[in-house]
Image 1: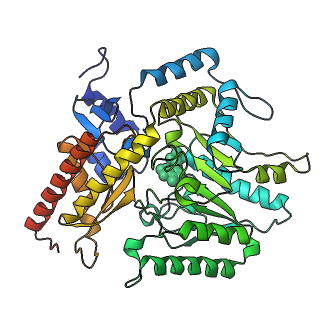
Image 2: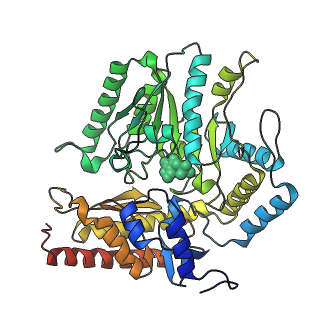
Image 3: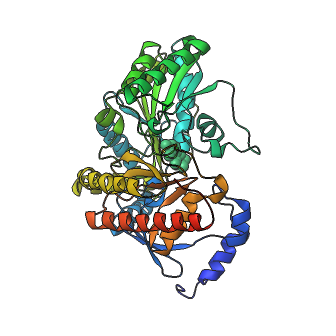
Length: 465
Ligand code: PLP
């Protein structure tokens, strides 16, 4: 397929291969195989440069919430680009879309989270939250209360600080450095990997006790913030045990530790809510970071939404400067896209669809537990993960070298389905517009792919139990 006598698919492959360094590039395979070039998207479907169609159960990257190819989104961005394609938001400048979006986010966010700082994406929202912890605690007269706690298997982004706050084992490569000093981690609330013999309530007690012990070890007077995704997304769709988040939030409040809910994935409908913190888990965070579904991926934008209390503390003496922000903070085209995106979600009741079809998705995915290799299926509404194991009773993993998640996703891809491989996991987060018929397609093709890969591994002499 050549568009307007432009480059052919193989020209594009070559250009990308010769010049691009992709996020999370794996140098060996990339130099050998290059990339799959995408050309078009509509709803939940993608077409590659050769014209092959795929159902995108990945949702881009947890982000194409309203689905691709919406002319209305294109029109809103084009109109804004023509009207005012850029305006800086520094110091005392603003523009209409960023003002309206700030007010809209304040109306959707829980409780007193009425203040918004726009960023370029999720990582920069996390960076800003980290800096705001320092700023706020210093304004409160606690300049030493600047260390932070996060969890193992968390993913908060890819800048130096956001990746230092994150801790997915696979990301911690020897060639990069991470800030260790003042950033601490406690266990992920992954019940599937809980110590043997613990029920969910005991596991929750164990996690809370670990958190209290960590605070005692560091000293509450030194800890300014706790970073937590309500559901740990890229760490393997880890839904915490009942009661865990409220108990963690209560401990934070008791010690003046700010609770930063990283809702880059969970916000804007993924689990059927604008924000999962209060509506799904009953917690009132001090800050929420969001991005992705905020524009459904049509254009980059992130936001840090924070409380009136934090604003009041920072603004208290009237003379301070908040020396943080980006050229593209409050970009009018991005903010216009976000406003249109939210309008579409409201008009089409996509949160309702995510709840209804998401419940069906959970049920169909749970059926995969009957297959060989599937040790766990977990998630909430339209974010689900399948954990592949060598031994279902013992929960032992297959060797990394077998790259089982990738083998399954490659097999699914040949049948027109995209699921995301992450080590031994396969992760899904389809657009909120997904129908029950499309859920059936995902369930059927994924089951077929898992069976095929399990058969092939058995033939290669791998023992599965
Ligand atoms: N936080 C979470 C929970 C994420 O999943 C991600 C990205 O996947 C980020 C932050 C970083 O966002 P971005 O890639 O927009 O910088």
